[in-house]
Length: 350
Image (cartoon, rainbow, N blue to C red; front, side, top):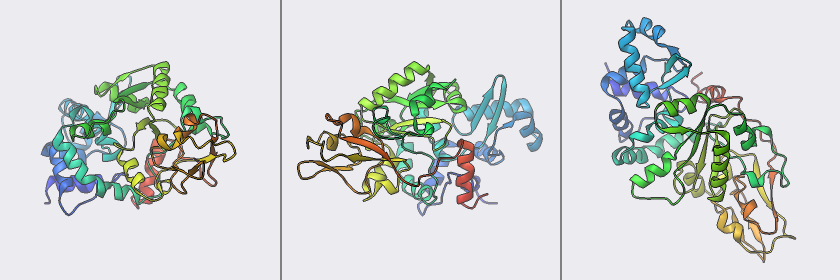
């Protein structure tokens, strides 16, 4: 029989986000860092959809009370996912990204960060191999309504106003980079979870509950700080990451490519009115992806680099920049569950 961690690796690779094998075995080191052998075995016997403890206990031939305690301990440690509806608790196995990695916010140490940094190129490459991304970019508030027709699923503030459960937590990417000796001056507590994910984050002590007003104020702060808004790539909100290009793995990769627009999912791109532009270059300094450059007395968009974040719009003192819809971009999946099923199908798992 193969090693329990090898089998767990294979199991997690069959989840939508994947968990590929590497030549160095760093993926196994990560699993050993996170899971005991018992937890590794139990995780493989869970389904990838919420299931009540009684059903899991019956299926596995386990004592229900003892199993409930163990599952809740694992959920509290971010190894599996827990869905709470009133007093009813359900548990499921969950993918590594977006999932188990982000659930480790309060457990991060330098060793884990170093292992993750070694593993990310392999995992990131696999995630980039499918057409559907788990994150997308939406324009910040100041860019909405200035020349662009913004679909309802990209009007982030209006979506926030509809939420019943909201939490705010520290950015795990900035925390990881700080532990690695690369501190960032952007704010820490400025990433958000909503609904079931928000409740899970609050219950686990990884974030605190906030109301709509505080969330909107923090989104204002994110824009002031020049952070890129990356929510769930679905019409229904599950999270919003407020990202910088120095810490976010996805944006770092995108920035290093000639055409970030081909790597990052977005619906808009910036357009500069040459007749209005004064060539002040404020937008050049503001752009996190180096998508704007100095031209002949005006600023110019670099072909293929704009990811539609809209941060340049508020930087322009003469309102010469607008966000324009990109042609032929389809609406995102309805919700996170549909998104994961779509990714699983693209990976040949469904």
